[in-house]
Amino acid sequence: DPAPLIHAAEQAGIVPREALYVGDAQRDIEAGQAADMLTIAAAYGYIVPGDSADDWGADLIAEDSGHLTRIVAELLDLPAP
Image 1 (cartoon, rainbow, N blue to C red):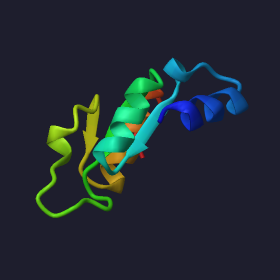
Image 2 (image 1 turned 60 degrees about the vertical axis):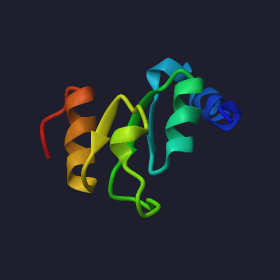
Image 3 (image 1 turned 135 degrees about the vertical axis):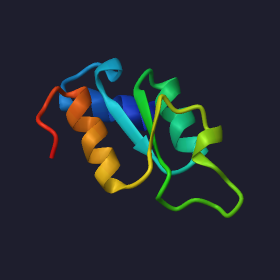
Image 4 (image 1 turned 90 degrees about the vertical axis):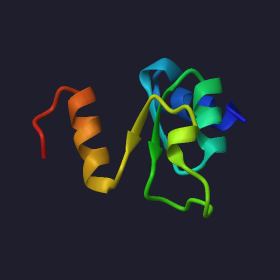
């Protein structure tokens, strides 16, 4: 359901398409896409055995938290950590 994500964007004072949404399940990525957000699959989170972040259709995939940090820094044009 994209409603909570859209509400969070409104509370932050941004439009959803300006947001990044990180999820560790396919339903998270689907909600982010339905909210018109850039989606990043956390391939290291709570993932059901046999599931693969590669199959979720996210815009980007982070292999670990360090990789996620580098992705976000690059997207925001910040120095690499």
